Length: 548
Image 1 (cartoon, rainbow, N blue to C red):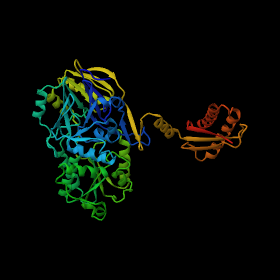
Image 2 (cartoon, rainbow, N blue to C red):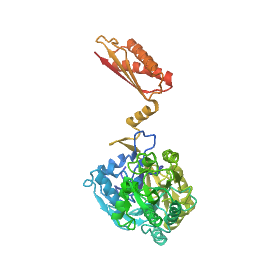
Image 3 (spheres, one colour):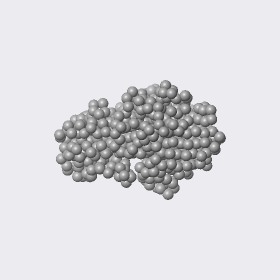
Image 4 (cartoon, rainbow, N blue to C red):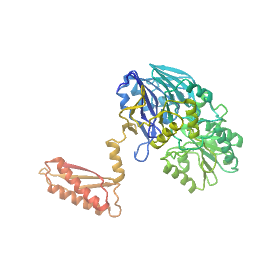
């Protein structure tokens, strides 16, 4: 597909899912990309931590891609850059704080010289071919959340990025209602917008309110350490907790690489100016526990994050005791319930109290509830609504809300939907290739390719190895050797392996060793039959035939 005299929207990630946002706009033969994010793996990808978007569609058309414009610095919007941007060979554009985070990622991967990163000031503009971009500041749970006004020969797009309304923002100056109304007055063809909290009947709330809620919780603790876990990227929350530390006479401690990185970049770009100095881990270990406020990563139960290691006692310096408090100043992302529950159970087992947003006002979301969405539609007044950034149920509800609030047309995309917005849009043109890749160790693989499928089978059923030794005349020269890993036999394992060996010998004796593949398959089938009869499982079984 090559866009003609038309305006096309084509998501490659983030439509039908929360995370991994990648969106393409095309017109007059060229494409631009908005965001390049990733998501975290779930248990269906054993051994994998990161999931990346499959960019085959645009990689095949890289000569027509003009650049990648980033809305803000969350991982689901910039996290795939170190792994995929260099292959696309186009420049990146981001505001200062977001650019600082990206620069750190590129430096860690040795890509600083290979990928060109352009810094655009807040409220700044850029031109890429027939696409004009203007950054519009919106409140979010990270500094420099931005919408994009995208001007094309075929109409204007308002791409919201992630956003909320906040009457008391602690960092930055989001656009006012008057400024957003002015954008609507100028005429907007389509609004491509965040659907995450469409089921929330109330507005998300202000960071200023959370400040008071956290102060109340921490102030009430006269003894013991207080640990607060939150998204490291939420610099406004870090500013809040710095203020809480000063108000309660506690010393601040940071735990987690991303917490340190975000703090460094925020300070370098003019944020967190009033953040108090932090204690080192060693100094904290020798400090009166009632004088400590520890900020740490791991709010989503990530096994290697600071809170998980603190909870299981494996952190190199920070230890908790009965009577300490852990506060989850974060939202539980769907899919992470089990991981979060494991950490909280580990804390409870040790007598450590846990407070979440269900017990106290210690968190507000960075995404718009229904009242905020309705307000934005009143201001922007697009002809077309294109919901993104949500599961299908979120996006369908968002489309219905838009239509109920005066928008003439709405279309719900899936990843790979090529939608003509103008002329005469919206119209579904085609379904292009879109999918998932996984970062497995240092290797990028198809998410449902042979490696991951085989690993799932190994995880579910275990593995067996069979070695059959043949003499020169093709006869079985020794008892077959059998190994089993992850197959559910324990006390009777010796008897099980013996029976498998008997089955392998019988199949090898009956078979014609000159037909190599057929011969090995018969042995494999015989051994798997025994395994199925013993366990109900069909383990992955490999057969090696050795000829003397």
